[in-house]
Length: 198
Image (cartoon, rainbow, N blue to C red):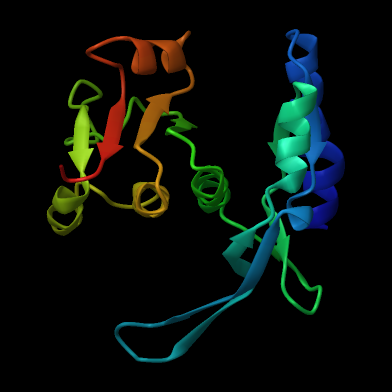
């Protein structure tokens, strides 16, 4: 059911909207790109193995379908789905999928669009955006509770991308007009950039 909704409703809807706005876009099924294994984790309190069901972790990315899109001048719109070695389909965290693609392509930048201005030091104050976050500061901010909830997997994905060779990851507010341009092409930026330690 999830596969059907993503492949036949959500992905085509995004492609259609991009085309309506004048962009060339093409849907790319994630299962043609992502080789995954079933996600398993251990509960830190009990030591029990947690069963995430049909949720996968990405092991490899096949970039040839993306290269074909780029050669044709198309924007690939990728579904966050992958298959394991036996052909079983798994759901993927979309941020993990984006980070894996960026790393596999050796992209210079990766941008996560969200509905918040960036990483906030105080979640109640949208003016408290942390403009630059270095990997070495992440652990302390997790302990302080600054990085919490849905921001934790997003920051984890950002670090994975940086470790795979991406130079900068940006967290920006997709509700703000021209936010991507303002973040990348201005000195001050409008969101949070996540970078290596040096």
